[in-house]
Length: 226
Length: 193
Figure (cartoon, each protein chain N blue to C red):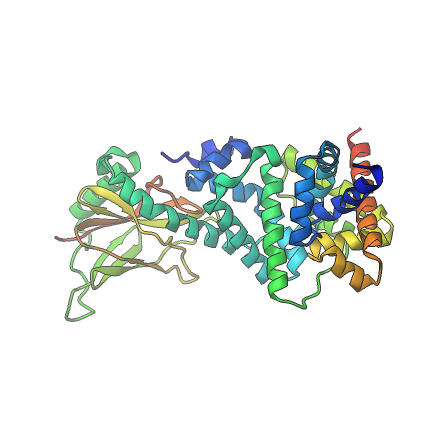
């Protein structure tokens, strides 16, 4: 290839790197690039300049809700897979945080906390389950096979924390997909799609984005009569 | 078993990517915490609207989450790859809103002063230094070179569209792009010397 022929590719190279060639031109340039060590060297030389362009922009702080929404989507992707894959072999009582929660539950039961069919306010049909603990009220309102978990009197959380609900079914712990973020009134709710076989519902404080297993202390625990 | 958050924080980006490919949410979260700000800033620079930048950034990161295994370490850093994904998404967004003019300014010195003091790592300090150098390099470019680079990289315009817009021969546009990139590259090299 003569020098003047090659000038054409040199001329296109910066436009190629800046994404300013048409798809056909890109394909043609990349065919040339595969066999041209000179252009490959130039691409490598220009790369730091190109990679520095996005670093030159004015810094904008992303809103916290972007991170929350992103991680909620990620967790939603992960949890069905993990549920299927794990069918967890670990015992409910094998984790310190869960063992702590169980102790809290036992103390609550002993102290005569209102656990079980405490909700008379909803009248007929399946009764809501209500429990109070640490000044927090948790109510599970049955709906079909599942239900809605309502929490009230929650304290505002530090920005790096969220509440996560868990259910125990046949001795295995499952995370409830949507994380709980208290509103200004200290209330939060989340849906539990399937309550069949669930004997306990627990809420723990977890790092932002949630966890795959309970890691924080239980803030409230509810026994579900079978 | 998923790597716990604290462990993930100690890993380099290139070590996180295989974990992201195996759907490790903690690894992905660390990746977002490291680069989400730059990604959002770039998206905002291109689309010029916070809500749209949020949408673009979320889409870009979700595409990374779902295709993490596609990252090729031989072709550059994770950050560069991530930002190129964001840039492509943002340009697609702009094109889908055809007719929307890109923001065109590089007068970012004042904004640089206002950047929050939340990132204090050595790496971030280096990035800031680099960003400052690039701002300087771009600011030092002759206006006509800066303009074609802005239109191409941040506006997503092809060289022929730019030629038409600026009423210049295509060869002139491509030549200015090359001269501009050469100058930025040269100033970065001087900064590192």
